[in-house]
Length: 262
Image 1 (cartoon, rainbow, N blue to C red):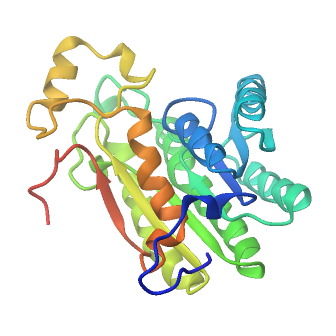
Image 2 (image 1 turned 180 degrees about the horizontal axis):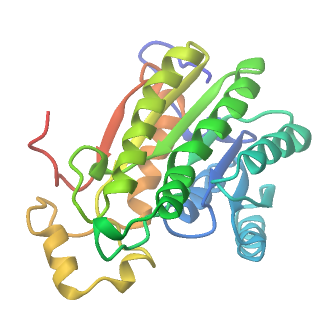
Protein backbone atom coordinates (compact mmCIF):
# COMPACT_ATOMS: atom_id res chain seq x y z
CA UNK A 1 0.00 0.00 0.00
CA UNK A 2 1.15 3.56 -0.65
CA UNK A 3 2.85 5.27 2.26
CA UNK A 4 2.30 8.86 3.37
CA UNK A 5 4.97 11.43 4.16
CA UNK A 6 6.25 11.44 7.75
CA UNK A 7 3.89 13.50 9.87
CA UNK A 8 1.20 13.43 7.20
CA UNK A 9 -2.36 12.27 7.62
CA UNK A 10 -3.45 9.20 5.62
CA UNK A 11 -6.50 9.94 3.52
CA UNK A 12 -9.32 7.51 2.93
CA UNK A 13 -9.50 8.64 -0.70
CA UNK A 14 -6.40 6.57 -1.36
CA UNK A 15 -8.85 3.67 -1.81
CA UNK A 16 -10.41 5.33 -4.86
CA UNK A 17 -9.97 3.06 -7.85
CA UNK A 18 -8.53 0.22 -5.76
CA UNK A 19 -10.06 -3.27 -5.71
CA UNK A 20 -11.47 -4.87 -2.54
CA UNK A 21 -12.66 -8.47 -2.40
CA UNK A 22 -15.05 -9.36 0.44
CA UNK A 23 -16.16 -12.94 1.02
CA UNK A 24 -19.47 -13.39 2.75
CA UNK A 25 -20.17 -9.95 1.32
CA UNK A 26 -23.92 -10.23 0.85
CA UNK A 27 -24.94 -9.85 4.50
CA UNK A 28 -23.82 -9.02 8.02
CA UNK A 29 -20.31 -7.70 8.58
CA UNK A 30 -19.34 -8.46 4.99
CA UNK A 31 -22.20 -6.39 3.61
CA UNK A 32 -21.22 -3.43 5.79
CA UNK A 33 -17.61 -3.71 4.63
CA UNK A 34 -18.64 -3.80 0.97
CA UNK A 35 -20.49 -0.52 1.50
CA UNK A 36 -17.61 0.91 3.50
CA UNK A 37 -15.02 0.26 0.81
CA UNK A 38 -17.33 1.37 -2.00
CA UNK A 39 -18.12 4.61 -0.17
CA UNK A 40 -14.39 5.39 -0.27
CA UNK A 41 -14.28 4.84 -4.04
CA UNK A 42 -13.01 1.27 -4.17
CA UNK A 43 -14.31 -1.21 -6.71
CA UNK A 44 -15.70 -4.20 -4.84
CA UNK A 45 -16.09 -7.91 -5.44
CA UNK A 46 -19.09 -9.30 -3.56
CA UNK A 47 -18.46 -13.01 -3.06
CA UNK A 48 -20.94 -15.26 -1.30
CA UNK A 49 -22.75 -18.55 -1.77
CA UNK A 50 -25.98 -17.23 -3.27
CA UNK A 51 -25.40 -15.41 -6.54
CA UNK A 52 -28.79 -13.69 -6.43
CA UNK A 53 -27.94 -12.08 -3.09
CA UNK A 54 -24.55 -10.95 -4.41
CA UNK A 55 -26.17 -9.48 -7.51
CA UNK A 56 -28.66 -7.52 -5.42
CA UNK A 57 -25.90 -6.06 -3.25
CA UNK A 58 -23.74 -5.26 -6.28
CA UNK A 59 -26.59 -3.46 -8.03
CA UNK A 60 -27.28 -1.33 -4.98
CA UNK A 61 -23.60 -0.51 -4.52
CA UNK A 62 -23.23 0.57 -8.14
CA UNK A 63 -26.28 2.81 -7.86
CA UNK A 64 -25.37 4.39 -4.54
CA UNK A 65 -21.59 4.70 -4.85
CA UNK A 66 -20.94 4.71 -8.58
CA UNK A 67 -18.14 2.17 -8.42
CA UNK A 68 -17.74 -1.14 -10.15
CA UNK A 69 -19.25 -4.00 -8.14
CA UNK A 70 -18.76 -7.57 -9.31
CA UNK A 71 -20.98 -10.32 -7.85
CA UNK A 72 -19.45 -13.81 -7.71
CA UNK A 73 -20.98 -17.01 -6.38
CA UNK A 74 -18.43 -18.46 -3.97
CA UNK A 75 -18.33 -21.29 -1.46
CA UNK A 76 -15.54 -20.65 1.04
CA UNK A 77 -15.13 -24.37 1.74
CA UNK A 78 -14.24 -25.11 -1.88
CA UNK A 79 -10.59 -25.09 -2.94
CA UNK A 80 -11.72 -24.89 -6.57
CA UNK A 81 -13.99 -21.91 -5.82
CA UNK A 82 -11.07 -20.11 -4.18
CA UNK A 83 -9.02 -20.64 -7.33
CA UNK A 84 -11.92 -19.51 -9.51
CA UNK A 85 -12.54 -16.37 -7.44
CA UNK A 86 -8.86 -15.38 -7.51
CA UNK A 87 -8.66 -16.07 -11.23
CA UNK A 88 -11.76 -14.00 -11.94
CA UNK A 89 -10.43 -11.06 -9.94
CA UNK A 90 -7.14 -11.21 -11.84
CA UNK A 91 -8.92 -11.43 -15.20
CA UNK A 92 -11.47 -8.69 -14.50
CA UNK A 93 -9.29 -6.18 -12.63
CA UNK A 94 -5.68 -7.29 -13.03
CA UNK A 95 -5.09 -6.50 -9.36
CA UNK A 96 -6.39 -6.85 -5.83
CA UNK A 97 -5.57 -4.32 -3.15
CA UNK A 98 -7.68 -5.58 -0.25
CA UNK A 99 -8.92 -9.07 0.59
CA UNK A 100 -11.33 -9.58 3.45
CA UNK A 101 -11.82 -13.22 4.44
CA UNK A 102 -15.14 -12.72 6.17
CA UNK A 103 -17.17 -15.79 5.20
CA UNK A 104 -17.72 -18.08 8.17
CA UNK A 105 -20.15 -20.44 9.79
CA UNK A 106 -20.83 -22.02 13.19
CA UNK A 107 -23.99 -24.15 13.11
CA UNK A 108 -25.53 -25.04 16.44
CA UNK A 109 -24.92 -28.57 17.71
CA UNK A 110 -26.90 -30.28 20.48
CA UNK A 111 -23.83 -31.70 22.23
CA UNK A 112 -20.13 -32.26 21.65
CA UNK A 113 -20.69 -36.03 21.49
CA UNK A 114 -23.08 -35.53 18.58
CA UNK A 115 -20.59 -33.66 16.38
CA UNK A 116 -19.81 -35.91 13.46
CA UNK A 117 -16.97 -35.86 10.94
CA UNK A 118 -19.06 -34.15 8.28
CA UNK A 119 -19.86 -31.24 10.64
CA UNK A 120 -16.22 -30.93 11.70
CA UNK A 121 -14.93 -30.95 8.13
CA UNK A 122 -17.53 -28.46 6.90
CA UNK A 123 -16.95 -25.90 9.64
CA UNK A 124 -13.18 -26.27 9.41
CA UNK A 125 -13.21 -25.91 5.63
CA UNK A 126 -15.30 -22.72 5.57
CA UNK A 127 -13.41 -21.00 8.37
CA UNK A 128 -9.83 -22.09 7.66
CA UNK A 129 -9.21 -24.16 4.53
CA UNK A 130 -10.89 -21.68 2.20
CA UNK A 131 -9.23 -18.58 3.66
CA UNK A 132 -5.88 -20.37 3.45
CA UNK A 133 -6.22 -21.12 -0.24
CA UNK A 134 -7.79 -17.80 -1.22
CA UNK A 135 -5.24 -15.80 0.76
CA UNK A 136 -2.34 -17.53 -0.97
CA UNK A 137 -3.81 -16.98 -4.42
CA UNK A 138 -4.65 -13.33 -3.76
CA UNK A 139 -1.37 -12.64 -1.94
CA UNK A 140 0.52 -13.84 -5.01
CA UNK A 141 -1.53 -11.42 -7.13
CA UNK A 142 -0.83 -8.60 -4.67
CA UNK A 143 2.86 -9.42 -4.54
CA UNK A 144 3.11 -9.29 -8.33
CA UNK A 145 1.54 -5.83 -8.29
CA UNK A 146 1.64 -2.95 -5.85
CA UNK A 147 1.10 -5.01 -2.69
CA UNK A 148 -2.02 -5.01 -0.57
CA UNK A 149 -3.75 -5.80 2.68
CA UNK A 150 -5.35 -9.06 3.79
CA UNK A 151 -7.90 -8.78 6.59
CA UNK A 152 -9.15 -11.97 8.23
CA UNK A 153 -12.35 -11.82 10.26
CA UNK A 154 -11.84 -14.19 13.17
CA UNK A 155 -13.58 -14.18 16.58
CA UNK A 156 -12.72 -13.45 20.20
CA UNK A 157 -13.86 -17.02 20.76
CA UNK A 158 -10.57 -18.12 19.19
CA UNK A 159 -8.85 -16.76 22.30
CA UNK A 160 -11.27 -18.05 24.90
CA UNK A 161 -13.57 -20.62 23.31
CA UNK A 162 -16.71 -21.93 24.90
CA UNK A 163 -18.18 -25.39 24.55
CA UNK A 164 -20.92 -23.93 22.33
CA UNK A 165 -18.56 -23.11 19.45
CA UNK A 166 -15.62 -25.43 19.84
CA UNK A 167 -15.04 -26.47 16.21
CA UNK A 168 -15.58 -22.92 14.98
CA UNK A 169 -13.19 -21.57 17.60
CA UNK A 170 -10.52 -24.11 16.71
CA UNK A 171 -10.76 -23.19 13.03
CA UNK A 172 -10.62 -19.46 13.81
CA UNK A 173 -7.59 -20.01 16.02
CA UNK A 174 -6.01 -21.52 12.93
CA UNK A 175 -7.06 -18.42 11.01
CA UNK A 176 -5.21 -16.31 13.58
CA UNK A 177 -2.09 -18.38 12.99
CA UNK A 178 -2.56 -18.06 9.23
CA UNK A 179 -2.72 -14.28 9.63
CA UNK A 180 0.60 -14.10 11.43
CA UNK A 181 2.24 -16.50 8.98
CA UNK A 182 1.00 -14.56 5.93
CA UNK A 183 2.50 -11.38 7.33
CA UNK A 184 5.87 -13.11 7.47
CA UNK A 185 5.57 -14.90 4.14
CA UNK A 186 4.42 -11.97 2.01
CA UNK A 187 5.95 -8.92 3.66
CA UNK A 188 6.99 -6.25 3.06
CA UNK A 189 4.54 -5.41 0.28
CA UNK A 190 1.58 -7.46 1.53
CA UNK A 191 0.26 -6.94 5.05
CA UNK A 192 -2.01 -9.36 6.92
CA UNK A 193 -4.05 -8.67 10.05
CA UNK A 194 -7.12 -10.10 11.76
CA UNK A 195 -10.18 -8.52 13.34
CA UNK A 196 -11.77 -10.45 16.20
CA UNK A 197 -15.44 -9.58 16.74
CA UNK A 198 -17.32 -10.31 19.90
CA UNK A 199 -21.09 -10.90 19.73
CA UNK A 200 -22.55 -9.10 16.71
CA UNK A 201 -26.20 -8.35 16.09
CA UNK A 202 -26.70 -9.88 12.64
CA UNK A 203 -29.39 -12.12 11.17
CA UNK A 204 -27.64 -15.07 12.78
CA UNK A 205 -28.01 -13.53 16.24
CA UNK A 206 -31.68 -12.83 15.53
CA UNK A 207 -32.39 -16.40 16.59
CA UNK A 208 -30.77 -15.92 20.00
CA UNK A 209 -32.97 -15.91 23.06
CA UNK A 210 -33.20 -12.85 25.29
CA UNK A 211 -31.15 -14.76 27.85
CA UNK A 212 -28.35 -15.41 25.35
CA UNK A 213 -28.29 -11.75 24.33
CA UNK A 214 -28.13 -10.59 27.93
CA UNK A 215 -25.38 -13.06 28.73
CA UNK A 216 -23.31 -11.96 25.72
CA UNK A 217 -23.05 -8.38 26.99
CA UNK A 218 -23.14 -8.88 30.75
CA UNK A 219 -19.43 -8.15 31.24
CA UNK A 220 -18.98 -5.80 28.30
CA UNK A 221 -17.85 -2.26 29.17
CA UNK A 222 -19.65 -0.76 26.16
CA UNK A 223 -22.85 -2.53 27.22
CA UNK A 224 -24.18 -3.70 23.86
CA UNK A 225 -23.67 -6.19 21.08
CA UNK A 226 -21.68 -5.05 18.09
CA UNK A 227 -23.36 -4.17 14.81
CA UNK A 228 -21.86 -4.75 11.34
CA UNK A 229 -21.06 -1.06 10.90
CA UNK A 230 -18.72 -1.20 13.91
CA UNK A 231 -16.21 -3.08 11.74
CA UNK A 232 -16.03 -0.62 8.85
CA UNK A 233 -13.65 1.81 10.56
CA UNK A 234 -11.21 -0.90 11.73
CA UNK A 235 -11.23 -2.49 8.27
CA UNK A 236 -10.56 0.84 6.52
CA UNK A 237 -7.71 1.44 8.95
CA UNK A 238 -6.14 -1.91 8.11
CA UNK A 239 -6.73 -1.44 4.38
CA UNK A 240 -4.97 1.92 4.09
CA UNK A 241 -1.66 3.56 4.86
CA UNK A 242 -3.10 4.61 8.22
CA UNK A 243 -1.82 1.18 9.31
CA UNK A 244 1.23 1.06 7.07
CA UNK A 245 3.45 -0.24 9.92
CA UNK A 246 0.88 -2.76 11.19
CA UNK A 247 1.01 -6.39 10.12
CA UNK A 248 0.68 -9.79 11.76
CA UNK A 249 -1.69 -8.45 14.43
CA UNK A 250 -4.76 -10.01 16.01
CA UNK A 251 -7.03 -7.09 16.91
CA UNK A 252 -10.07 -7.50 19.14
CA UNK A 253 -13.12 -5.42 18.21
CA UNK A 254 -15.44 -6.67 20.92
CA UNK A 255 -16.68 -3.74 22.99
CA UNK A 256 -14.04 -4.53 25.61
CA UNK A 257 -15.46 -7.95 26.40
CA UNK A 258 -12.07 -9.67 26.66
CA UNK A 259 -10.14 -6.68 27.98
CA UNK A 260 -8.61 -8.77 30.74
CA UNK A 261 -6.65 -10.91 28.31
CA UNK A 262 -3.04 -10.08 27.48
